[in-house]
Structures are given as C-alpha cells and as structure tokens.
Length: 179
Length: 353
Image (cartoon, rainbow over all chains, first blue to last red; front, side):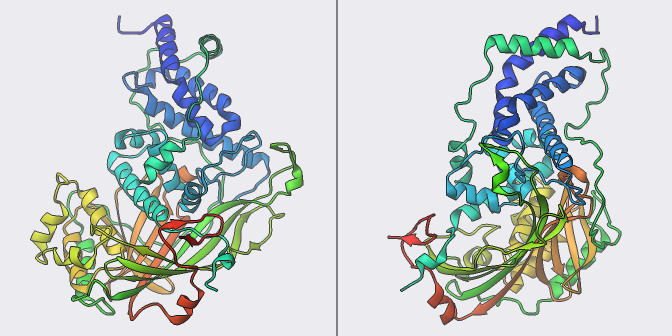
C-alpha cells in the first residue's frame, strides 16, 4: 500500500518527537525562555497537522523553520496585544521583552555587546550557526532561502560578528582618559 | 573565534529534554487533538512561509526597474561596471605604502526596537503593565585612523546621533539620546590580507589583467558565482582598495552573471546599487558612484515581510569614505583612552596592563 495509515504516522510522529523535541526545546529556550514549552507544543502540532510534508529523513531543520515562525508569530502577537500600531513591525531577534519571557539570558558582556551591535538578521544567522550548529544547507531550510543565499548570509554575518568581537568595546570613557 | 565563544556561552547548555512520561503525554495530546490530511503528497513548501502581516508600508525607497538575468551578465551591469572602472577620482594611489595612515569614516544607520515602559510596571520577573514599544532609527559615525595594512596602532572616534522614533507607541519619547561619544585606541599586531581585508601586500599580489584576476577571484570556488560576487563586494566594501585594484575588480564584476542593477539616491546624488542573489527577505546592495568609480557603501532593504517590515523598508545602511592622512589628529590622541595591552576591561572600556 502506498498510503500510510494513521497508526503508522502516529508511530513515526512519536519517533520524530522523541528524537528532536530536545533540540526544538533548546532553540525556544534560547530565544523565548518563558514560552519554550508553548513553542515546542506549537511546532509539533504543526508537524502533526502537516505530517506529509515533514522530511522524515532529516526533519530537524524543517522543525527549526517552524519554530522560527512560531517565535516570530509570538513576538508579533504580543506586539499586537500591546496595541503597538506599528507601521514597522518586529525585526527578528530584536528582543522585545516578552510578557512570558520571565528569564533573561545574560551572556558575558563582550559577547552580549557583539550580539547587540549586529543587525537583527545577522544576529539570527550567527545564533543559528553557533547554537543550533547548522550547516549552510540546513540554514537555507530554516531561513527559507536558496543555499547560495544562505552561504552569503552566513559569510557576511560571520565577518561582521568577528570584526565586532575583535575590536575593543567601551562604555564609560570618562574613567579612562589619559590623565 | 566568535562562533566558538558563542557556542561555549549557549544559554540552553545543560537544559534537559522532557521525561519519557512527558513525551508520551505530549504526543498523545497532539495526536488526539489534531487531525492531519492523510495521503496528500504535494510539493514541499518552503518552511519559512509566513502569514500575511497587516502592517502599512512606510518610507519605500525610490528604486527603478531591476534587471535580472541569471545566465549572463546584463548589458546594464556590464556598462555600469565599465563606467566605474574608468572613473577613479579621489582614489587611493596605487603605490600605497603599508604604513601610510588612512582615515576611514563609516556612517551607519540602523533600525531597532526599544521598550520605554516604566520599571515599576514589572513585578518580579514579569512585567505587569504594557510595554511601551517603539521603533527607533539612529545613526553612528565612526572615524578610524589606521595604517593601510591594518597593522599597528589604531584610533577610533565614535559619535552617535539621538535615536529618533519612526513608528510605535505615542507614549514613547520622540527621541532618546544615543550613547556617549567615545575615542579609543588599540594595537593590531598582525593582519593577514584576504578579499575582505585587502592589505597593500594582498593587492600587489593580484593580477590586473581581467581574465587572470577573474581566475583568482574564482579560485577554489568551483565556479560559484555567488561566492565570487561576495569576494568582489567584500573587497570593494573594505574602503582600502587602490584605484588600479578597484578598476580591475570592476571589470571582473562585469563578467559575473546575475548581478542586478538599480539606480537610487544617496545624500542627493544618484548612485548605482548592485546586488546578487535572493537573500531570504532582504537584499544586500553594494552602492557605487559609477561616475567617480568610488564605492559609496552598503544598504540592506527588506524584499518581503519575512522580517516583519514592509518590502522596500530600509533595515540598515552604511557609507564609507577613505582619505589619506599623516596620522591621527592631535585632539584625537589627546582624548584617547588610556593605551594599554590587548585585554580590554568591559567595566571601564579601557585597555588594562
């Protein structure tokens, strides 16, 4: 039979969930720590509803792509709730404080400074490369672009991040003037 | 390297997945509550398709019709690059010495999101009142004094404009002061030249013949036009190319298929924006004043609503101007932070011995 039965799908779905929910949970905890469980639930609900579209041989980048949209949607929904009639909407990873975002991650200042100074889209790429450890092909799946475009974005984001990381940072210059 | 450092600082490090019991319960709940359409095997859609956004378009930049020819370089691209190759006014001299000081001025603009809610609106970790959100645009001007090779002492003066509100809550201020101006100085012991960091030595090692230089640009890329374009635009963006390298690179750029050409206006003058490849909701443009042959800077523009901003919205931009100077001016030296070794204090922002 060429058609999968619901029972088969149910077992496959459980396998996918068991194997990958930890990675999706980590993705959500890095970005919306207060909503992480909610995000995981939404991602796998989408995966179940569209199970025929889940690339079973390599589902994780696809799941990350869904998780990315869920995080963006959550940020937008919160923006709407907050009656922000924005003509310019949320940039990804712009880190608007979230109502459910109780925990805030504190990176060491030098790294935090680099992430703050990157453009939101560079920052997203850098985080995906570092934390989700994605290849260029996987990055393309998550961002929904061609592999060449993903390679370009990875290349440029890495270049800009490294430059920011290599140069000194400053906050209160008055303390440091030459006497 | 930045990626390794970030990996070590993974905020989700050590976070554990769900227990077996919880996995069972979650799977059962999802599978029970949702029915999927069985047996439909369609073409897989792109994962990142987003719902329609209801946001109004603002500040759409004026652009003319683009030309897209993936197979061959467009006639327009060839013509513009050839024009740029001819012009070389205000260029760095070909015999640029490694220890010649350059003044590199970069002016960049960036859109960001700010929260202006009162701290009292938070209870414990959770905010109890509405965040007061606004989209702010600010400009940073950075003047760096450095040698042409990049080796040696560098000085940088950074000034920040106030951030102006471009959209968002009426309760947010119309503008907020930017960070304080800063002058600092540091040593760079070695720089290895590459396409993104074209030192005088690196440039001297490049052929000037178009075919030979093209082979060098494509070296190791297996014919990948996009990566070749990246190398060329990185080099043109560096602000340190001499006139002859630049002219030669423009002629190579004219042979790269698929480069889009758009006319646009920057600071009241017409410049040409070159870009290549679709870039997941944004387009990185390289701006060149083809009449003078000088690269003007870069610009990133939204092309769909992936980023939540309307198509045409400027996401960020930067302009770079390079001049030959004898060294940093005395007032910059006088204002410089205490010069020390290579470690930097994050509390005080100064180098420490």
